Image 1 (tube, rainbow, N blue to C red):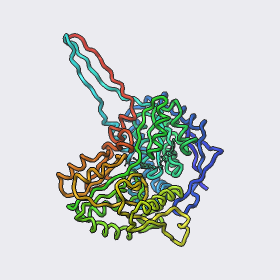
Image 2 (image 1 turned 90 degrees about the horizontal axis):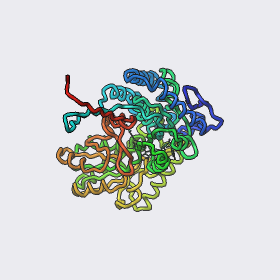
Image 3 (image 1 turned 90 degrees about the vertical axis):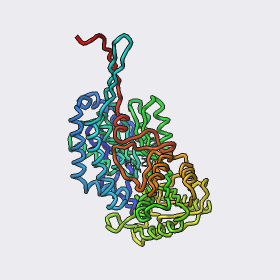
Image 4 (image 1 turned 180 degrees about the vertical axis):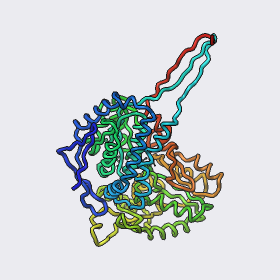
Length: 489
Ligand code: NAD
Ligand code: 6OD
């Protein structure tokens, strides 16, 4: 049986406390995972400080950028190992892991290496009374040791989205992947070791949140910043811990995202896009559309076409080329999603398709599957309209005017993403600018340029990552102000 160990100060560290990592397709055991205790997490943070105050703290931009490229190249070289580990931990289809998760893991290192090499800093001249002047310029320095805590839905993609810019900026990291998906993070530690990342720069600790590695990171007084992706509720707990010591935080949290479909949209393009926006990764993408608003003129046509396509989704073994949908991540998460399926009915929803658990007649019946589901008929204040479900389900409702749908879409405490479908360019600009979200796609969804700001408003997060936004979060900027007197001689 595979063993996933911690990687601390450049060495593999075992623990007496082991937990099991399951394959959600059939519940089988993937690996035994070594849970880091408090001493191990403390040692990882000390190792990070040792690296930052040592040779790593003095590396040139060019050397760090070259190292980022070597990491990306090694992820590419070990692509099949990464695919196997990601698929075993998540059950997601090969078609998704091979086109999104693993390539983005490598791309995250390359893009931040490139940004690092071209990143500019502020410089201002200020004229003073009497003829003197002052020159201001900013200097970029690492924050120190950054705690990176990530979720299970896009394990390698989301972990490297934070580790790459943090390391590019000269920090050390202590990374804790989700307890559900320790596989690709462990391979990433192997990659770091193989390409010669100095000991202490990248540390990996396995474990859970409260009372485990997650809490040990966030409560350690020597951690210099915390970057977290996960549930909004967990964000609250981490923010409390970070308040002690006033640690910088970057939070990418949950969503209850709206899709707005106007009658003038390109119907086929929109249906292809909406199938992804609702069901990609079995709805377990923070950007997924759980609330779909459709202009009344095409409401019935949309529902018929959507339900038809949902019936064509193929659950299956991840490596089967036909498979378009995998299981949910765990029994606990399946039970949560099924509780929302039940709640929807209690709240008066009509289930147009799905609503149950598929039956396979083989080992997959021990896995964590639910049917893709489309519901209608809920009131705007129903819990299923207000709360993030994070499964393959959407509620569809009709609207009659632009003003009405903007109000409906913004009627949420979250504020992560929206997707708008229309061929009217004026409307596209008007409505997207009115969305109270961090990310608004038009005639597309989850189309990513990694230089752009990524993050959410309200319950969906604090701060933006991506491009220079990441560089600025993972840096301490010092402004140098020099007074210059006299005239040139
Ligand atoms: P989660 O909050 O349960 O766990 C995320 C990570 O936090 C895990 O590593 C977990 O062990 C750790 N953790 C849990 N409690 C902790 C604590 N008290 N202290 C420190 N660490 C703790 O989230 P999840 O179930 O893994 O992921 C699903 C959630 O993530 C959804 O809400 C989804 O919307 C959100 N998400 C958001 C984004 C985004 O970019 N906004 C991206 C992906 C997922
Ligand atoms: O694409 C990204 O950079 C990113 N952070 C995606 C998040 C997806 C949420 O599940």
